[in-house]
Image (cartoon, rainbow, N blue to C red; front, side):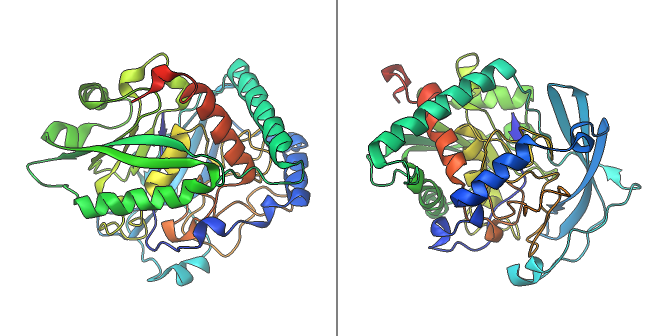
Length: 380
């Protein structure tokens, strides 16, 4: 499962058209070469690595955290956070864009904020890579080798959405209008890649335990999803609640469905929907990020500076999550490639996020096609 802190405060109608220079073929080749030739210093980084990130508190103020990446073994990485007292944040996205990542204190108190537990399976990723390459060859044969892989003109894959609003006697409820705006955001962000999300049903459930305690890998979280989930592998089940600990969301991966279909879906913070109360994270991009995991994407900083990173060739190596919305950042020294701070799979403010790369689009299409939309048994 993957946990993510992030969402948007302002949605630009042209955001899906805004892509970084990494989308060009020359930059993509440079990124791929960098991932393939990471220095031995990066490849042999210490067992515990500290990086900077931030977390919004209940009032929307930013808390600087120390993220400790613990390498359990060569296939397992977990991340936990330490949150400091609140610090003031810029009042606008433009102010945030000029703010560098703050320093981190080692004396901060421990509190979970973002725990990433993706166990890299070499056999699985080899299969995934073969699926992606086959998908890219098919698209090239249809559209020409020089074309991008966007498939907006093709018949989109229709994804039924079951929206479960978990509340505590009305506390944490979200309106139908907010749900409609949230669907507009993810449709805008995913339509260039051929995904169309349609609301199939909205359920409102009052359950104080689920509302407050259904965190990632918790028994209550599994109980909640198993009790409420509808549809097959192709159905996106959403659950909003209040984590109360700085966490903004978590999701399952598409390849998890076969072994544990009952818990498939996305759980995310209720006030991150468009118009919600969580400053810098209230424009709907928390769900955009989590649906990326649901379709097969990893964080852009997966694996740090070492290859193969997030298993996408055209996203630059990235040592750690982005804090806020800096004007520029290059966390992997020596590669001369800027971090993908505007990518939906980073941790930037919602207003800072505006694109998926072509490589990410191909990965989503290929892996969701294999694990979620392949057979008629996946129907809702």
